[in-house]
Structure formats: C-alpha cells, structure tokens
Image (cartoon, rainbow, N blue to C red; front, side):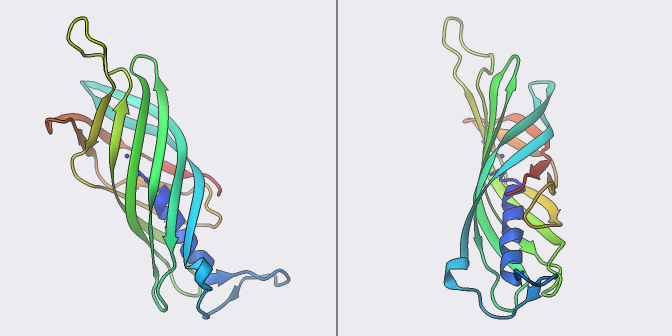
Length: 205
C-alpha cells in the first residue's frame, strides 16, 4: 500500500550512506569525510524496482497469496550535520494478476527515516516508514444484476508501519515488512480487506 513500502526506507538509508561515505577511485577502502555534501546531493530522487513476494490479503473470507512487482520513486534528503537520521518520501506501485479477481494493484505514499548505525559505520541502518495508500481489485465480483462490475478501490483505514534494515548500498535484497496487519476500507468506511503480510524486497538501483 506507497505501501511504499520498504522501498522508501531503503532509498532513505541509501541517500544517507551516499552522503556519509565517499569511496575514492584508488583507495581500497571508503574514505570518510566530515565535509558538507554539495547542495546538488542534498536532495536526491531515486527510481528502483521492488518485489513483494508472498503478500497475504484477507478478502471476503479468502486469503489471497500474491507475488507483486513494480517500482518506487523516492526523494531522499541528506542528514543534518551531526545527525544519524535521513528523511525520505516517495511513492510505490506494485501489482499482480489473480485468476478470478483480475489485476490487483497496491499504491502508496510514505514518509520515514533511516537511522544510521554510526558516522564511521553507517550500515546496517534501521528503517521505519509510515505509509498510506490504496488497494484496487479489478474484478471484485459483486454488482447489481445487469450492471457492469466496477473496480473496487479500498484505502488504508489507518497509516501502516513498515520496518526493516538496509545492509548494503546499492540496495539489493534487503527486506521491509509490516509491523502489524493493515485494514483497508471502502467509501462507507467498512473494512473490505486486510493486508496481513507485505514483505517488500528492494532490487538493486
């Protein structure tokens, strides 16, 4: 659901790491610097693919087990001087095809932080994202007799929390998961589905 999901967190940490560790072309190990990064690097936009393998959604008495794929776009701000927290915001969109329900799409927007381990060794970084979004089901299967079936769009009842770690940069294979199940409601504020599992894996940028 932005769930921007993990993708945002990973990008946030990635941006922080880029600004905290500057590798040189000839040195065998990264060269640490305390200089303020150039202004052009204080605001970064990153696009990358994401995979949600094994997502579980409770919908009308059945459990949907889905593997969704898509991409995320992230804006990453550099940490303030002396700070170990990097801020990030962005969007995520992933989808999967279901044999009965058609295309199922999750879109989300998220804001969060990447808490770096230390100035000298920023990784692993703890990731925390707050996200809201929508779940769209192409063929929900319910409509008055003779009427066309319209896609069902559900929205997060309350913001969701995603947590994880960034262990390397460029990010690849790191996992972000839901801290707890997330209810999604219809236009009448009635719960139409619950996402119980949403493991987001960020592929290499």
